[in-house]
Length: 218
Image 1: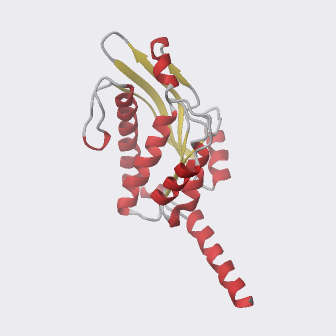
Image 2: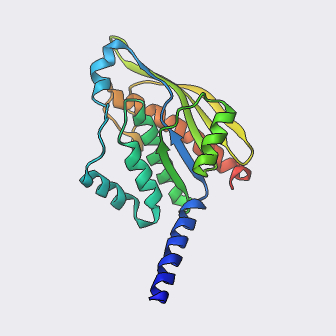
Image 3: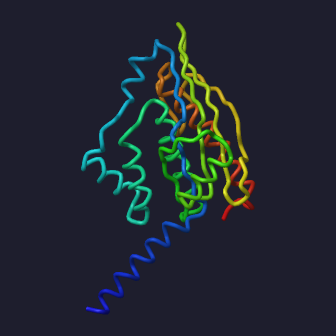
């Protein structure tokens, strides 16, 4: 009995260690503010979720992430309980950053979260410390516009690093509704293309910075 208990404690300890010592570790925050034209009201409502994921959805998430990413799965399930149009970018970043980082570093941890903040360095530091995470992707504001011919988006994003207590990226980007192809393929002229183009542009910026600046890694 004592031997069984010891094994269980050891397994639990190793699991916690493996989830809390991931490199790189990133939390992608839901946009602090999401704005869209009145002409997009009906479309935006299609992306509003205020219900907890079903047991079937939870199971799919856990199976997709695998047993070594239990924390990631639980954070994604929690995040999915409240989403809107802007959340599509957060969840897209969560997915793509995880996917690309796993290609060259399986010991990473990326997950989404709802954390209200004022986008200052002090606030982002608190969030990083609370999550025991070295990187924070914060989105102070995302806007969606439409006219007779097309839809577009504008976003401000920040990349914060806890190790150096520094906002290393703080940019405003724009995107159209045309199909970018490849991993972000979508139907041109749709809001999905706007969110995909914003997500892809931010992803490439962040991945490029992480690749060139290993000194910031824990």
